Amino acid sequence: MSTKKVLCIIAGVLVAGLLIAGITAAATYADNGQGAAGGKLLDRVAQLLNVDKQKLVDAFKQAGTELRQDRMNNMFNKWVTDGKLTQDQANQYKAWLAAKPAGAFGPLMGLTVMDKLLKDNKITQAQYDAWKTWWNQKPGFELPKPDKAAAGNGAQKGPFKMK
Image 1: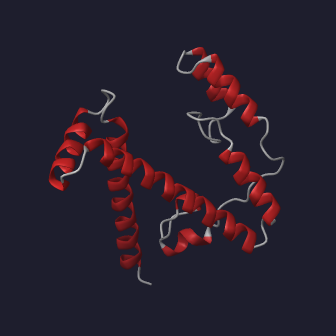
Image 2: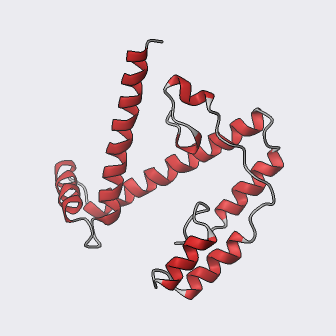
């Protein structure tokens, strides 16, 4: 594949990702005062589609959740197929992720970050305690690193790989 074609594919993936991220951010922040422009965009889209704005926001949130879940499942399935994890390990890790307390930050947030958020009053002690309890139940094995080979063909790496 030519370099020009690879660059076009990468640019297309980046543009699509930025568009999805922008729309999702607009949907997420439209009603909490952090995204007045996003709120106007969603107002207009809802008007054009003749749908309730809250239904539109909820649809974007649901779609984002479903896409993240699909990417995660595909990633774990590939690791099992490639022999990098057993099915039992994949099931353990997915169960742990599913048990994350509602509204808690994900596994990429380490204890140092959570300590700072608590200190800065960005989260409550109860949120911190729930996250820490969940974090301490993390399965006792490391996940495989994403394949570097996937990056060579214009695809994104890891759980954010687009279909």
